[in-house]
Length: 362
Image (cartoon, rainbow, N blue to C red; front, side, top):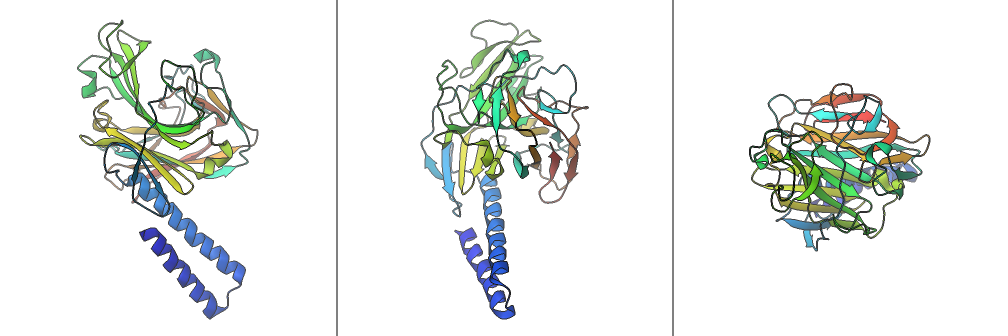
């Protein structure tokens, strides 16, 4: 309960200053609120970097920093879409997004996405996109938060197949199919990891994908198959979190070689994490780029925001150094997901130090 204790101490200090200096009570209340907000932000950051005691699903409530095991939901039937970019655009997604690039010789072990500023966000609906056959989970408050890795061509999980890429997505979805073979929806907001082996194998057809993976069909470039698998999910809310809650949401993904992969969400005073052994894609051996954003809900869909909506997006990374990462422009490099939103990208800056990050607007 160290954060709770610290908050009490800090508030007590503020109170003593007020009694000595005679500061107005309104100012005292504002200062106490600021102290509490800082303590809460620190707690959220701690939970994103705190390992769970094992594989499975876990929950914690502020100010506790102890993960408690909870029952996992079944692996959802969510499926993202691979990008089909036709041209470089400043709208977000489908291969056109800012990504954060690790310094030369470094690998990411985690990436944490948040929205420091959310302006005039009132409504959102997920709509189908013609290039993806109008697919996805469509309607109001249907959206995802995604932390996406780069496509990794040297993964041991590719079993030596030429042209195979490993890809990993850490996903919070406000609604998912019950399974990859069902169209029924859970109606719940969940967090999970989606694993991909793209163009796996030397031929297309049945029984090509490794055990546990579902055959997602022949790869567009061939000759192999696109294989996909989701982890069991953690239920964040028994319903869809409205887009107006966006400022309270943070999502991180982490991968530790010979350790665990985990997807973690904090929502207000609650934290949730889903963990699994880092053996399905071996992404920890080749994670050099990360993409984070709020996007449509699966299937290449687009999250359409109301006119006037604007966001500041932050992606903080861990790579074992204090060097500033690189903002990779959409004109120079692709994001890796097919989902999009209707906002337009602004400027991006990179910062080094104890918590290297990029910050951009849209």
